[in-house]
Length: 149
Image 1 (cartoon, rainbow, N blue to C red):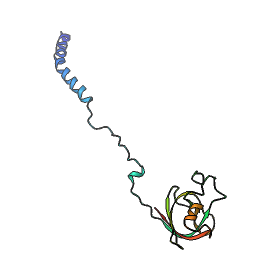
Image 2: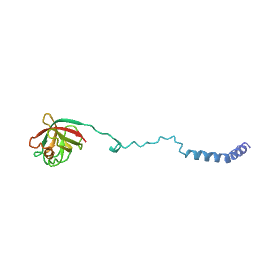
Image 3: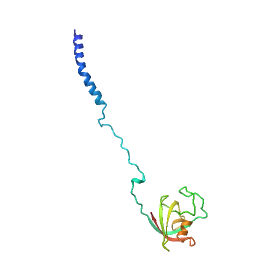
Image 4: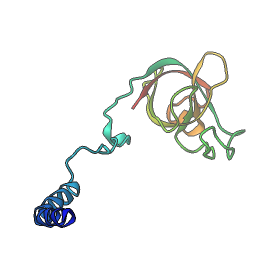
């Protein structure tokens, strides 16, 4: 007799427990926003930065060419003495530099693609083509101003 009463009570609870079970099941499938969301880090390409490097030097420039023509530069490029390039001890490879010959006012733009100069008291080593444009090829050296572009 006790089993019948318990069974009747259990059978009476089933209709009420089904909707409760369905509500619990539905809620467990919902995103309540408690999970950690992954945030995409910002891209670190050059377009995101508005940095202007300011660099200017005044000093003695020299040029190099014939003995180095066709050899690999510090940047990995092949040195071509007919190109407008230069060697600098610390500026990043690929930096464009305006070089002004302070003796005659001639100005050129060169790309840094090598390290140097290794002669004492020199600030930049220019390719032969750059030296020609600055009208310093015959003298070998000139007082120059270097400005990063």
